[in-house]
Length: 383
Image 1 (tube, rainbow, N blue to C red):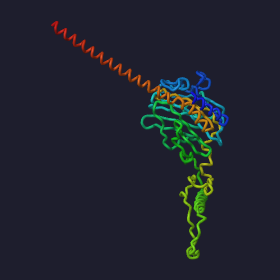
Image 2: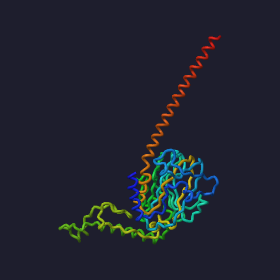
Image 3: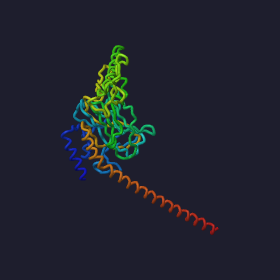
Image 4: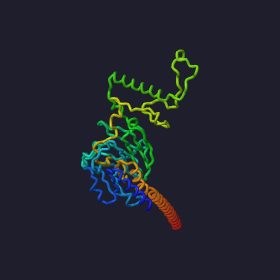
Protein backbone atom coordinates (compact mmCIF):
# COMPACT_ATOMS: atom_id res chain seq x y z
CA UNK A 1 0.00 0.00 0.00
CA UNK A 2 2.91 2.35 0.70
CA UNK A 3 4.06 1.86 -2.88
CA UNK A 4 0.63 2.83 -4.17
CA UNK A 5 0.62 6.03 -2.10
CA UNK A 6 4.09 7.01 -3.32
CA UNK A 7 3.19 6.40 -6.97
CA UNK A 8 -0.04 8.30 -6.62
CA UNK A 9 1.90 11.13 -4.99
CA UNK A 10 4.09 11.25 -8.07
CA UNK A 11 1.00 11.16 -10.31
CA UNK A 12 -0.59 14.05 -8.43
CA UNK A 13 2.61 16.05 -8.76
CA UNK A 14 2.62 15.42 -12.50
CA UNK A 15 -0.99 16.62 -12.81
CA UNK A 16 0.22 20.19 -12.44
CA UNK A 17 2.45 19.69 -15.48
CA UNK A 18 0.41 17.23 -17.52
CA UNK A 19 -2.88 17.75 -19.28
CA UNK A 20 -5.21 14.84 -18.60
CA UNK A 21 -8.02 14.90 -21.15
CA UNK A 22 -9.73 11.72 -19.97
CA UNK A 23 -9.22 9.24 -17.14
CA UNK A 24 -11.55 6.41 -16.15
CA UNK A 25 -11.00 3.75 -13.46
CA UNK A 26 -14.63 2.81 -12.64
CA UNK A 27 -14.14 3.35 -8.90
CA UNK A 28 -17.59 4.80 -8.16
CA UNK A 29 -19.79 1.76 -8.67
CA UNK A 30 -22.69 2.00 -11.10
CA UNK A 31 -22.19 5.75 -11.67
CA UNK A 32 -20.21 4.80 -14.76
CA UNK A 33 -23.54 4.57 -16.57
CA UNK A 34 -23.83 8.37 -16.29
CA UNK A 35 -20.61 8.79 -18.28
CA UNK A 36 -20.74 5.95 -20.80
CA UNK A 37 -23.43 5.79 -23.49
CA UNK A 38 -24.54 2.44 -24.90
CA UNK A 39 -25.32 2.64 -28.64
CA UNK A 40 -28.89 1.85 -29.64
CA UNK A 41 -28.07 1.67 -33.34
CA UNK A 42 -28.78 -2.08 -33.29
CA UNK A 43 -30.98 -3.90 -30.78
CA UNK A 44 -28.69 -6.93 -31.10
CA UNK A 45 -25.66 -5.09 -29.70
CA UNK A 46 -24.17 -6.83 -26.67
CA UNK A 47 -24.32 -5.30 -23.21
CA UNK A 48 -21.58 -4.41 -20.75
CA UNK A 49 -21.43 -4.86 -17.01
CA UNK A 50 -18.97 -3.70 -14.36
CA UNK A 51 -16.86 -6.65 -13.20
CA UNK A 52 -13.39 -7.57 -11.96
CA UNK A 53 -13.80 -11.07 -13.39
CA UNK A 54 -13.26 -14.51 -11.88
CA UNK A 55 -9.74 -13.68 -10.70
CA UNK A 56 -8.18 -10.29 -10.00
CA UNK A 57 -5.52 -8.40 -8.09
CA UNK A 58 -7.99 -6.15 -6.28
CA UNK A 59 -11.73 -6.74 -6.38
CA UNK A 60 -12.67 -3.04 -6.62
CA UNK A 61 -9.70 -1.53 -8.46
CA UNK A 62 -9.80 -4.19 -11.17
CA UNK A 63 -13.44 -3.60 -12.04
CA UNK A 64 -13.97 -2.53 -15.62
CA UNK A 65 -16.36 -2.80 -18.56
CA UNK A 66 -16.90 -6.48 -19.35
CA UNK A 67 -18.58 -7.92 -22.43
CA UNK A 68 -21.37 -10.31 -21.42
CA UNK A 69 -22.89 -12.00 -24.49
CA UNK A 70 -21.32 -14.37 -27.01
CA UNK A 71 -21.41 -13.71 -30.74
CA UNK A 72 -22.27 -10.00 -30.49
CA UNK A 73 -21.18 -6.59 -31.71
CA UNK A 74 -20.56 -4.02 -28.96
CA UNK A 75 -20.69 -0.23 -29.11
CA UNK A 76 -20.28 2.12 -26.14
CA UNK A 77 -18.53 5.47 -25.67
CA UNK A 78 -17.73 8.29 -23.25
CA UNK A 79 -17.44 11.97 -24.10
CA UNK A 80 -15.00 14.56 -22.71
CA UNK A 81 -14.07 18.19 -23.33
CA UNK A 82 -12.89 18.50 -26.97
CA UNK A 83 -9.24 19.31 -27.63
CA UNK A 84 -6.62 19.47 -30.37
CA UNK A 85 -3.29 17.72 -30.02
CA UNK A 86 -1.59 20.00 -32.57
CA UNK A 87 2.02 20.49 -31.57
CA UNK A 88 1.59 18.21 -28.54
CA UNK A 89 2.31 14.62 -27.66
CA UNK A 90 -0.76 12.40 -27.51
CA UNK A 91 -0.77 9.37 -25.20
CA UNK A 92 -3.62 6.83 -25.26
CA UNK A 93 -3.55 4.07 -22.65
CA UNK A 94 -5.82 1.41 -21.15
CA UNK A 95 -5.85 -2.13 -19.79
CA UNK A 96 -7.57 -5.13 -21.35
CA UNK A 97 -8.07 -8.62 -19.96
CA UNK A 98 -9.23 -11.52 -22.14
CA UNK A 99 -10.31 -13.67 -19.20
CA UNK A 100 -12.16 -16.05 -21.53
CA UNK A 101 -8.91 -16.79 -23.44
CA UNK A 102 -10.04 -14.94 -26.58
CA UNK A 103 -10.39 -17.10 -29.69
CA UNK A 104 -11.86 -14.49 -32.04
CA UNK A 105 -12.70 -10.90 -31.27
CA UNK A 106 -11.47 -7.37 -30.69
CA UNK A 107 -9.89 -5.83 -27.62
CA UNK A 108 -9.12 -2.44 -29.14
CA UNK A 109 -10.43 1.05 -28.44
CA UNK A 110 -11.31 3.96 -30.73
CA UNK A 111 -10.85 7.71 -30.29
CA UNK A 112 -13.58 9.77 -31.96
CA UNK A 113 -14.24 13.35 -33.03
CA UNK A 114 -16.31 15.37 -30.54
CA UNK A 115 -19.34 15.35 -32.84
CA UNK A 116 -19.69 11.55 -32.89
CA UNK A 117 -23.29 10.38 -32.46
CA UNK A 118 -22.97 8.21 -29.36
CA UNK A 119 -26.51 6.81 -29.52
CA UNK A 120 -25.92 5.63 -33.09
CA UNK A 121 -22.30 4.52 -32.71
CA UNK A 122 -21.52 1.64 -35.09
CA UNK A 123 -18.88 0.24 -37.40
CA UNK A 124 -19.37 3.07 -39.89
CA UNK A 125 -18.85 5.85 -37.35
CA UNK A 126 -15.77 7.90 -38.25
CA UNK A 127 -12.91 7.66 -35.77
CA UNK A 128 -9.49 9.30 -35.51
CA UNK A 129 -7.50 6.46 -33.96
CA UNK A 130 -8.02 2.73 -33.49
CA UNK A 131 -5.58 1.05 -31.13
CA UNK A 132 -5.28 -2.29 -29.38
CA UNK A 133 -5.26 -6.08 -29.76
CA UNK A 134 -7.27 -8.11 -32.24
CA UNK A 135 -7.31 -11.93 -32.10
CA UNK A 136 -8.92 -14.45 -34.43
CA UNK A 137 -7.74 -18.02 -34.88
CA UNK A 138 -4.08 -18.85 -35.45
CA UNK A 139 -3.42 -16.12 -38.01
CA UNK A 140 -4.55 -12.87 -36.38
CA UNK A 141 -2.88 -11.96 -33.08
CA UNK A 142 -1.92 -8.35 -33.64
CA UNK A 143 -2.05 -4.84 -32.23
CA UNK A 144 -3.92 -2.44 -34.51
CA UNK A 145 -2.64 1.12 -34.85
CA UNK A 146 -4.89 2.84 -37.40
CA UNK A 147 -4.89 6.60 -38.06
CA UNK A 148 -7.49 8.58 -39.98
CA UNK A 149 -5.93 11.00 -42.46
CA UNK A 150 -7.23 12.70 -45.60
CA UNK A 151 -10.55 10.80 -45.39
CA UNK A 152 -8.77 7.45 -45.34
CA UNK A 153 -7.79 4.94 -42.64
CA UNK A 154 -4.13 3.98 -42.63
CA UNK A 155 -2.69 1.08 -40.59
CA UNK A 156 0.84 0.59 -39.38
CA UNK A 157 2.45 -1.79 -41.85
CA UNK A 158 4.57 -3.51 -39.18
CA UNK A 159 3.17 -6.64 -37.55
CA UNK A 160 2.88 -5.90 -33.83
CA UNK A 161 2.04 -9.03 -31.84
CA UNK A 162 -0.40 -8.76 -28.93
CA UNK A 163 -0.69 -10.75 -25.70
CA UNK A 164 -2.92 -13.84 -25.98
CA UNK A 165 -3.21 -15.09 -22.40
CA UNK A 166 -6.04 -14.49 -19.93
CA UNK A 167 -4.32 -11.85 -17.77
CA UNK A 168 -4.70 -8.06 -17.69
CA UNK A 169 -2.27 -6.17 -19.93
CA UNK A 170 -1.45 -2.47 -20.26
CA UNK A 171 -1.51 -1.03 -23.81
CA UNK A 172 0.01 2.40 -24.55
CA UNK A 173 0.20 4.39 -27.79
CA UNK A 174 2.35 7.53 -28.00
CA UNK A 175 2.14 9.91 -30.98
CA UNK A 176 4.61 12.81 -30.97
CA UNK A 177 4.66 16.10 -32.94
CA UNK A 178 7.90 15.09 -34.69
CA UNK A 179 5.97 12.18 -36.31
CA UNK A 180 7.64 9.56 -34.13
CA UNK A 181 5.51 6.99 -32.33
CA UNK A 182 5.85 4.29 -29.70
CA UNK A 183 3.68 1.26 -28.90
CA UNK A 184 4.10 -0.22 -25.44
CA UNK A 185 2.70 -3.34 -23.81
CA UNK A 186 3.00 -3.65 -20.04
CA UNK A 187 5.22 -0.58 -19.98
CA UNK A 188 7.77 -2.03 -22.41
CA UNK A 189 8.30 -0.58 -25.88
CA UNK A 190 7.58 -3.25 -28.50
CA UNK A 191 7.49 -1.07 -31.63
CA UNK A 192 8.52 2.48 -32.50
CA UNK A 193 9.62 4.56 -35.44
CA UNK A 194 8.34 7.20 -37.84
CA UNK A 195 4.71 7.56 -38.84
CA UNK A 196 5.85 8.76 -42.23
CA UNK A 197 7.69 5.52 -42.99
CA UNK A 198 5.75 2.92 -40.98
CA UNK A 199 2.31 3.71 -42.38
CA UNK A 200 1.10 2.99 -45.92
CA UNK A 201 0.85 6.64 -47.01
CA UNK A 202 2.15 6.46 -50.58
CA UNK A 203 -1.36 7.08 -51.95
CA UNK A 204 -1.27 10.54 -50.39
CA UNK A 205 1.69 11.79 -52.40
CA UNK A 206 0.78 14.58 -54.75
CA UNK A 207 1.55 14.06 -58.42
CA UNK A 208 4.36 16.35 -59.58
CA UNK A 209 5.25 17.70 -62.99
CA UNK A 210 8.49 16.62 -64.72
CA UNK A 211 10.00 20.02 -63.87
CA UNK A 212 9.14 19.57 -60.18
CA UNK A 213 10.62 16.07 -60.20
CA UNK A 214 13.81 17.40 -61.77
CA UNK A 215 14.08 20.14 -59.14
CA UNK A 216 13.48 17.55 -56.45
CA UNK A 217 16.28 15.27 -57.70
CA UNK A 218 18.65 18.22 -58.18
CA UNK A 219 18.04 19.35 -54.62
CA UNK A 220 18.74 15.85 -53.33
CA UNK A 221 21.96 15.66 -55.40
CA UNK A 222 23.15 19.01 -54.05
CA UNK A 223 22.37 17.90 -50.55
CA UNK A 224 24.37 14.70 -51.02
CA UNK A 225 27.34 16.73 -52.28
CA UNK A 226 27.10 19.05 -49.29
CA UNK A 227 27.09 15.98 -47.10
CA UNK A 228 30.41 14.84 -48.64
CA UNK A 229 32.01 18.29 -48.29
CA UNK A 230 30.86 18.60 -44.72
CA UNK A 231 32.91 15.61 -43.65
CA UNK A 232 36.24 16.73 -45.19
CA UNK A 233 38.98 16.65 -42.59
CA UNK A 234 40.03 20.32 -42.47
CA UNK A 235 43.00 19.50 -40.22
CA UNK A 236 44.63 17.29 -42.89
CA UNK A 237 47.56 18.86 -44.81
CA UNK A 238 48.26 18.54 -48.53
CA UNK A 239 51.17 16.33 -49.59
CA UNK A 240 54.34 18.33 -50.26
CA UNK A 241 54.87 16.78 -53.72
CA UNK A 242 51.26 17.27 -54.87
CA UNK A 243 51.05 19.17 -58.22
CA UNK A 244 47.62 20.71 -58.74
CA UNK A 245 48.11 21.24 -62.50
CA UNK A 246 49.21 17.64 -63.10
CA UNK A 247 47.40 15.76 -60.37
CA UNK A 248 44.19 17.80 -60.19
CA UNK A 249 42.38 18.80 -57.00
CA UNK A 250 43.83 17.28 -53.87
CA UNK A 251 41.34 14.77 -52.39
CA UNK A 252 41.31 15.67 -48.69
CA UNK A 253 40.81 12.80 -46.29
CA UNK A 254 37.32 12.30 -44.89
CA UNK A 255 36.06 12.11 -41.36
CA UNK A 256 34.35 8.84 -40.48
CA UNK A 257 30.67 9.13 -41.34
CA UNK A 258 27.65 6.98 -42.16
CA UNK A 259 26.56 6.73 -45.82
CA UNK A 260 24.32 9.60 -46.92
CA UNK A 261 20.62 8.95 -46.65
CA UNK A 262 17.95 11.60 -46.71
CA UNK A 263 16.19 11.70 -43.38
CA UNK A 264 19.00 9.87 -41.54
CA UNK A 265 19.36 10.86 -37.90
CA UNK A 266 22.72 11.40 -36.19
CA UNK A 267 24.04 8.41 -34.27
CA UNK A 268 27.27 9.10 -32.41
CA UNK A 269 28.14 12.14 -34.54
CA UNK A 270 28.92 15.53 -33.00
CA UNK A 271 25.92 17.79 -33.54
CA UNK A 272 28.21 20.61 -34.72
CA UNK A 273 29.19 18.66 -37.83
CA UNK A 274 25.76 17.17 -38.47
CA UNK A 275 24.25 18.33 -41.74
CA UNK A 276 20.56 17.75 -42.26
CA UNK A 277 17.82 20.12 -43.39
CA UNK A 278 14.32 18.74 -43.81
CA UNK A 279 13.29 18.81 -47.44
CA UNK A 280 10.20 20.81 -48.31
CA UNK A 281 8.41 19.95 -51.51
CA UNK A 282 4.84 19.67 -52.74
CA UNK A 283 4.96 15.89 -52.66
CA UNK A 284 6.76 15.45 -49.35
CA UNK A 285 4.52 13.74 -46.83
CA UNK A 286 5.76 15.54 -43.73
CA UNK A 287 4.09 18.73 -44.82
CA UNK A 288 0.90 17.06 -43.59
CA UNK A 289 0.01 16.71 -39.92
CA UNK A 290 -0.23 12.94 -39.94
CA UNK A 291 -0.78 12.54 -36.20
CA UNK A 292 -2.67 15.74 -35.36
CA UNK A 293 -6.42 15.84 -34.81
CA UNK A 294 -8.36 19.06 -34.33
CA UNK A 295 -11.49 17.94 -32.49
CA UNK A 296 -10.85 14.91 -30.25
CA UNK A 297 -13.83 14.47 -27.96
CA UNK A 298 -14.80 10.84 -27.26
CA UNK A 299 -13.39 7.39 -26.59
CA UNK A 300 -15.20 4.12 -27.05
CA UNK A 301 -15.40 0.41 -27.77
CA UNK A 302 -16.82 -0.65 -31.11
CA UNK A 303 -15.97 -4.29 -31.74
CA UNK A 304 -17.10 -7.89 -32.28
CA UNK A 305 -16.54 -10.88 -30.00
CA UNK A 306 -17.31 -14.57 -30.52
CA UNK A 307 -16.83 -15.38 -26.84
CA UNK A 308 -17.51 -12.64 -24.32
CA UNK A 309 -15.70 -11.92 -21.06
CA UNK A 310 -13.13 -9.24 -21.95
CA UNK A 311 -12.64 -6.49 -19.33
CA UNK A 312 -11.57 -2.92 -20.28
CA UNK A 313 -10.24 -0.60 -17.57
CA UNK A 314 -7.88 2.26 -16.63
CA UNK A 315 -8.54 4.45 -19.68
CA UNK A 316 -6.24 7.46 -20.03
CA UNK A 317 -5.71 10.20 -22.61
CA UNK A 318 -3.00 12.75 -21.81
CA UNK A 319 -0.16 14.77 -23.32
CA UNK A 320 2.43 13.56 -20.83
CA UNK A 321 4.35 10.31 -21.28
CA UNK A 322 5.69 10.31 -17.73
CA UNK A 323 2.23 10.80 -16.22
CA UNK A 324 0.93 7.86 -18.28
CA UNK A 325 3.84 5.71 -17.12
CA UNK A 326 3.19 6.55 -13.46
CA UNK A 327 -0.55 6.02 -13.86
CA UNK A 328 0.10 2.59 -15.33
CA UNK A 329 2.36 1.66 -12.42
CA UNK A 330 -0.16 2.89 -9.85
CA UNK A 331 -3.03 0.88 -11.39
CA UNK A 332 -2.06 -2.18 -13.44
CA UNK A 333 1.41 -2.25 -11.88
CA UNK A 334 0.00 -2.75 -8.38
CA UNK A 335 -2.53 -5.46 -9.22
CA UNK A 336 -0.80 -7.56 -11.91
CA UNK A 337 1.10 -9.71 -9.38
CA UNK A 338 -1.84 -10.47 -7.05
CA UNK A 339 -3.98 -11.24 -10.11
CA UNK A 340 -1.61 -14.00 -11.23
CA UNK A 341 -1.35 -15.31 -7.67
CA UNK A 342 -5.14 -15.60 -7.39
CA UNK A 343 -5.31 -17.36 -10.76
CA UNK A 344 -2.62 -19.84 -9.65
CA UNK A 345 -4.51 -20.58 -6.40
CA UNK A 346 -7.75 -21.13 -8.31
CA UNK A 347 -5.97 -23.41 -10.79
CA UNK A 348 -4.63 -25.57 -7.93
CA UNK A 349 -8.07 -25.74 -6.34
CA UNK A 350 -9.64 -26.76 -9.64
CA UNK A 351 -7.01 -29.49 -10.15
CA UNK A 352 -7.60 -30.77 -6.62
CA UNK A 353 -11.34 -30.79 -7.16
CA UNK A 354 -10.93 -32.60 -10.49
CA UNK A 355 -8.75 -35.29 -8.85
CA UNK A 356 -11.27 -35.77 -6.04
CA UNK A 357 -14.11 -36.14 -8.55
CA UNK A 358 -12.06 -38.61 -10.58
CA UNK A 359 -11.25 -40.66 -7.48
CA UNK A 360 -14.91 -40.61 -6.45
CA UNK A 361 -15.95 -41.85 -9.89
CA UNK A 362 -13.37 -44.67 -9.75
CA UNK A 363 -14.52 -45.68 -6.30
CA UNK A 364 -18.14 -45.60 -7.38
CA UNK A 365 -17.25 -47.68 -10.43
CA UNK A 366 -15.54 -50.29 -8.28
CA UNK A 367 -18.51 -50.44 -5.93
CA UNK A 368 -20.89 -50.84 -8.85
CA UNK A 369 -18.65 -53.59 -10.24
CA UNK A 370 -18.66 -55.48 -6.95
CA UNK A 371 -22.41 -55.17 -6.65
CA UNK A 372 -22.81 -56.46 -10.20
CA UNK A 373 -20.54 -59.45 -9.45
CA UNK A 374 -22.39 -60.16 -6.18
CA UNK A 375 -25.78 -60.15 -7.92
CA UNK A 376 -24.55 -62.52 -10.66
CA UNK A 377 -23.07 -64.90 -8.05
CA UNK A 378 -26.35 -65.12 -6.13
CA UNK A 379 -28.39 -65.66 -9.28
CA UNK A 380 -26.19 -68.67 -10.20
CA UNK A 381 -26.63 -70.18 -6.73
CA UNK A 382 -30.37 -69.81 -6.93
CA UNK A 383 -30.41 -71.70 -10.20
